[in-house]
Each structure stands twice: as structure tokens, then as C-alpha cells.
Length: 381
Ligand SMILES: [Zn+2]
Image (tube, rainbow, N blue to C red):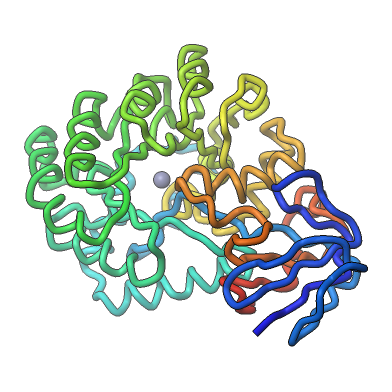
């Protein structure tokens, strides 16, 4: 089965400059041809883009989509002046532990539909709201039902039942919990932050995961500066995420490495933290990704277009850079070269916008501009 998507007014390929009056041929689950519409080959099905813009499907490389309950009251209190602290995670842990597998699964499937309708075709999902051996195991198993990009985040926060015994909790994470979660996960992650895990504990967690064949990534420098970014670079992490407070040494280390810095604008938006300076990072040569960090505490949006709009408005990115960071940048943060780019041989993950150009994603914030989404060559929205 071949589908020709033609009469594309602006095609962002991430494989050279944007093309105009372009077409894309989908063959099965892959892209097989990209070029000028007038030279397009024949196909079983023709879809007329009507002169509108097409971009790669978004690659959201950071989410926490398996959880129970919500924290709307905490958000309301924060907007009234209360400060965000990492400890709020514990209330979601309590709600997640009491939810059944089917409740978590139904909720997760709802989120997947929600984010696909907004153009996301690849999503990474973390555990981290179970924080016991059995609960973390069921979260990674449920996440693995919907994505291959599963991250074991037993080291999200020290649970209340281990209060003041954080090293013992790290023993649990790096021992029995890792044993049951590693077979279902690709990544190991840790929240390296005041109120969560120290840099020494973070090293233990990531090194234990690496020894079990998981690849490292890290939450760091969200609430203040620290040594997390340099540890992530030292351990060859695919990505270090947040980076709201970066020293010049952090930026130099990132620029000289293969580690992506993943910015999460939804967090600063809904915690009223200062926005990180994406311009500083890009100008220094750091590879930057954008992701939603969908979670019930610090960022309960699943909208990559919203994150693009904020990154352009408040973080110094151009619309082209922001779309790149939300597609090819996310792919780099997941060490994937088959998504985030529209080129022959890549996965047929495409978004047709209700707009003549990708600039509208930032120019028309909050407007549902996603007309149609293909994932693996299948129209999913
Ligand atoms: Zn996160």
C-alpha cells in the first residue's frame, strides 16, 4: 500500500532546508520518496495537503504518563503563591499505588490518544510513581505496552516509607527493583536534585543501570545548579533534562559531548520558575530537544505545539529551531535515527498542519493546528 501526500506548501524535513510545493511517498510504514510535487511517483492513495505545511511527527522524549490521581489543588495553591518542591511527587505515589493495573492502563491509553491528536508519534515514558519493587515493575510493564522507549525511574524521589534512609532506598533501587524492571526498560533515569537524590546517589543509580544494559539519562538542574549535568556527560547519558540552572562549565561540557539537553518549557510555565535560555545553549553548540514532561505535578500538558510556542516566546528559539528540537532533537535524545526526519527510509511519522507554515505553531498558541497525523504510515488522527 502506497500513499502520496502531495501539494505540500511547506515541507520541514530536517534533512536540509524546507521544501515548497513538495510531496512525500509513504510505502507501508516507511517513507520511500521525498521531492517536488510535479515529479511525484504514482500511488495507491493520494492525499492533497491543500498547500499546507507538513512536519515530522513530534518526538516527545520525556514523559511520566503512568500514574493515579491528579494534583489540581496543588497547582491552584502554587498559582496563589506556594513554591514548587520535589516532595509533591509523593502524593502521586500514594494515588498510583492504590490504582489498579486496568485503571492505569486506561488512563495511559487516553493520554496516548491525546498526544497523538496533537502530533506526537514517538513518546518516552518513565516509571517513578510506584517506588516499591512491585509497583515500579507494574509501571514499566504497562508503559512497555504502548512504547519501546521505557525508562526505569525508581530514583524519582525517596518515598515516605524510606524517609531519612535515602541510601537504603538507593540500595533497593539498584538491587531488587532494578532486577525486576530492567527486562522491560531501555533507559535508566534519576532525579539529581536537592530534595531528591545527591550526585553520589545518582552515580550509583546510573552505573547500576548501565551494568544491567540500560542506557542512562537524567533529570538535573531543575530547581538549582548542581553537579548532575557533568555527571550525565561523564557517564555518556543520551540526555540530561531540565537544565534550568546551568553554569558555564555545564554548557561547555554539554557542547563537547553527545549528550542532548532536553528543555521542558511546560515545567517553568506551571511552576513559575525562570525559563532556561535556549539561545545560550544553541549558540554554544549544545544539541537541544524540547519535550512536555507530562506529569500531574509540575507540567500537566501533553502538547508539543504548546512547548514550541513557549520556547519561541520565552526561551529565545526561532520557530525552525523549536520544531527541530521537538522532532529531530527528541530523536537525538532517544538515540533514534529512524524518526524525527522526513527522508527516504525513515518511519512514516508525519503531521499535516492546518497552517501554511510551521511558524504558526508558535504564532497561533493554543489553537489546534494539527489536521492529520500518520504514525508508521497509518493515519492515527
Ligand atoms: Zn520528568
